[in-house]
Image (cartoon, helix red, strand yellow):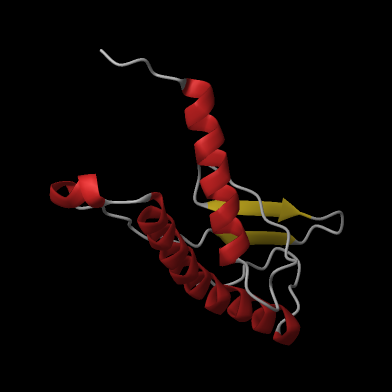
Length: 119
């Protein structure tokens, strides 16, 4: 059995995640703060004035596949190209969601206990 090397796997995973995050962020939303939530389907903020802001999560997905029949010929550059393409696709999925939320909040101020529509 081959050794596991969890520290090295974590470093590689962190490097790929950083690379994807840099490519996903697109102007004008590249400065929007983000964080990963691993469970649930929405985020709720209850403000001091009693207003409630429920934000349904938007799933952003992209699949990466590597042909195992040609794996011996696959280079790191080939894998990075696939990751870059996936990051661009995920950025394209995020931008319309941000634009919708921005439009909604500019057009419709929330009233007490009003829920915004899901996207």
